[in-house]
Length: 361
Image (cartoon, rainbow, N blue to C red; front, top):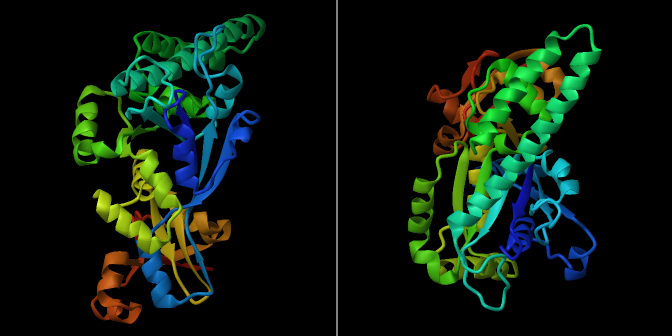
């Protein structure tokens, strides 16, 4: 899975990327590169517990690929914050994180004259709509030319019909994520990677003093935003940068002092999983304990295919135990005694946290 990070200048976007990736970026590199990438391990206390129980040779966390796109200033030519050269790269992500400034700091320039979280969210959403509108208009022009040239036009005419629907929807300032698509349209929208159709996670970069009322701030924002498939989470860049430098024990002490229940990394990854519609299951043993990421609604055979294609093709049964049951019992033997160890067929829909062993031919 790949998630792109975008935000207005001086929003704390790169600081956000650094805390997620737990790596520092040389300021000189910001002038040379337009994209920074990191593969981050997805923290999972359930996997940690299973590793303690089975003591394997290797523990393998699920991973997320995170990309930070450098947006320096608004273009005078396009009147957009998104450089044209970057839009095609941003389209390749499975979801987007919009970093929005909510902190007051006179030493940090502001893209606007004031702090207005909702306004900045709208600006970023409008950028996505603008990019999609521009794409649709260009695609319609090309389709008209292709329709004139081709003898077999059915597929082209269908695509034109869809593009015209999208154009009308975008002109009403509506995101394509809210558009009710047919199966054919869903396939097409996936191929074209439309920006306004992507799941969004908004990270609001707040002041340390905002911690006590951060949930209220986020709650009020949620009331104003009607877009589907969007999550909003508070984030405290200065504190997170401090936490990044500390050992685990010191980190926990500082988090307690500030009243933070969990790190931004943990909280934001959970939200990212929600907007992406994915979940984890586990495979365990003496050699390896591993977390696997799959789409919600996948059945046992499809999940087996995520491990290896042979497991999909030669699938017989899945041995399944829910993590909560395993933790309560402490072993597979106890789970079997209590009837919690199950044999499931290929149509079984995996739940988040299932421990699965695949039987195959």
